[in-house]
Image (cartoon, rainbow, N blue to C red):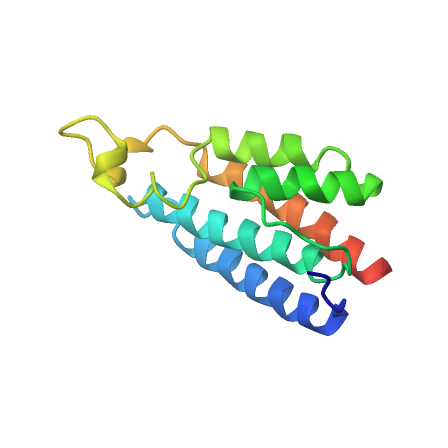
Length: 141
């Protein structure tokens, strides 16, 4: 089903993505890297949805953020490299499930202990770049 493009709605989603990223920043070095990664995931998800909202093409929801990034690259050649950015973030632990549920880790590891070696600042810096790029893209439409 085709949708009506909505730049104002996209900007609203980008504002929330920015808020989620700020919340992630507030958690840096507070012994909860899983929450930093989860909040980055939430920011990434909202930023990708924002770009989708700018299109009138029929959109069959791909599975996961990687699928969304691949779809966006296909319809927006200016977003080339987005998939690589999403893959990098996922490789660092940016995920909605593994950051929250013990069943995604071997016993006795829990999410709050599973990501202790992650470079929280590096992840945030990379996500800020992605968010800036997606904001710039929406602003140019």
